[in-house]
Length: 302
Image (cartoon, rainbow, N blue to C red; front, side, top):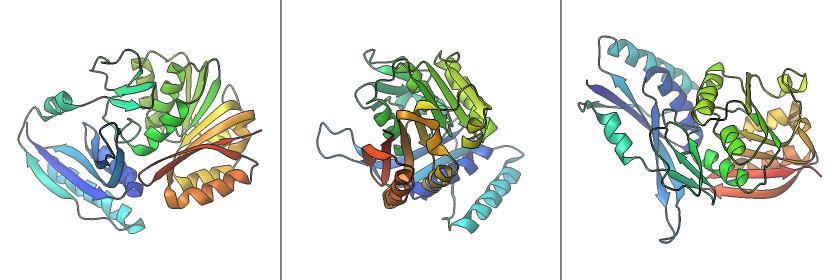
């Protein structure tokens, strides 16, 4: 079977939107690549520079129609923010997916977590393994925003706690929290496909009973659509402007007294606006991390 590779190199803020468009037309998922900077031999590396998003279209009778629909979707996205022209390349290798699997390396997060695909056995039994197939570009542990969130999550003692995951996506943060000791996690997303994906990943990781999933966001939680309206820990790995809007919509009300919220998906230049929105709700910053241009914050309520 032949494939047509389509790729586009964009900055970090646009990569997720481009990946979402590619994913609509690529049956085998989307991959991303980004440069890594190392300071020494011990350094785990810091993602830096633009991100290349890749997808593979099956060469068949519908290819031209698929390509036209893909370019139409990119055109409308480009009306919001200019995009480069997509690059196409013919791939003749029938087994490119299997070859790619052989070269895939697990991702270490902090001192406690290891992200690996479902087909791979954990090479480090002392780490908590999270199995997420890299068929989606984001929420697989490869993007700095997810890694930052997981890093901050790994600093906390989650034993017996409840957590709320806003914009749960693949469910990776919810799954990690449960595997780190959380008793019950509520994951919500406005995209029903994300809920399906989260449920599948939860079953793969054998945490389906501890994870409550549903379509919705802050408003639906606050009106009582789900089993609990607040938690000691909340996570939101979404875009900075959305975080700011959600604070106006009651995001801080989800945090119980003495609890905290982990915020990610924030570019360095957006850090100030997110901090101001959180501080306006009487939250204070207790931890923060940075990878390349991306920042994640832990804000706490006394």
